[in-house]
Image (cartoon, rainbow, N blue to C red; front, side):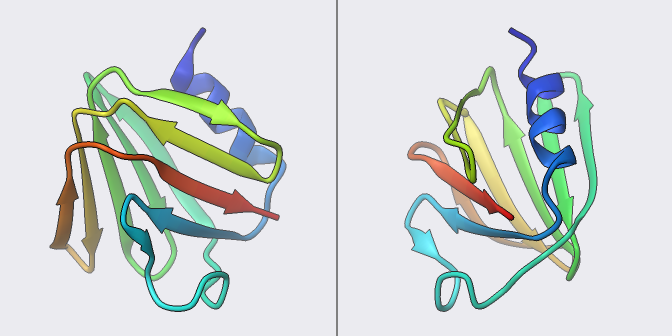
Length: 101
């Protein structure tokens, strides 16, 4: 299983995304919709860059679950939620959910 390749393929068939951090949504669920700018793997880090200058950086040997419209990412060592280059929050456990349409 190639997690990076599988996640990239999941993104290819979607145009608009919302997300849920391990503690829940930022704002009202599904109010904010984003597009993918880039997805990059460097060493042990996976970076998902969305519009609105949002960067989600996952470290570790993460796992994922494809639920069709939802991609659940878990078992990461660390998740950094960065907006406009500013670290907003860090998570060391839980599940991250991307919802794509």
